[in-house]
Image 1 (cartoon, rainbow, N blue to C red):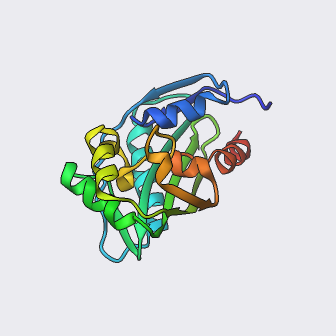
Image 2 (spheres, rainbow, N blue to C red):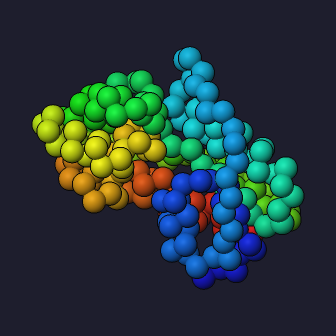
Length: 191
């Protein structure tokens, strides 16, 4: 495995931390506060890349030496971006919309090597198809609290959210929150 400098993950997502820990990097994580505003008419790929870069711009202010990683994920159904649910009713409504349909998960990420100033901004798309869900199982999942901090109101890696997914086309880890293969290739480009 390649020798990497210290890796800094600027994300509050425990899922992203867990994924990066698979690489056995010298890893430190922290969160940055940035508004995650949507711009009307902006394409989803552009949205996640822009939001990841805005998080990177904030993280750079902490003067870390090594590689800083930021990311942002959105779910898109019929051209409309679906973010994190506002409350339990919103989570139910989102899952009801996804039921029986195929949506696309977009994750954008930014990598900056602060030692040599090499920068990569990328995104990955994965299509996810849900089976038809009944109201009771949606409510059971919503009441577990799991959907509340996730784009699209579900986690494919969850104990129960996983059973909603009938099939996917693309990177599984992208749906979790970081497209590991593309991320790793990009890391190698900037060392």
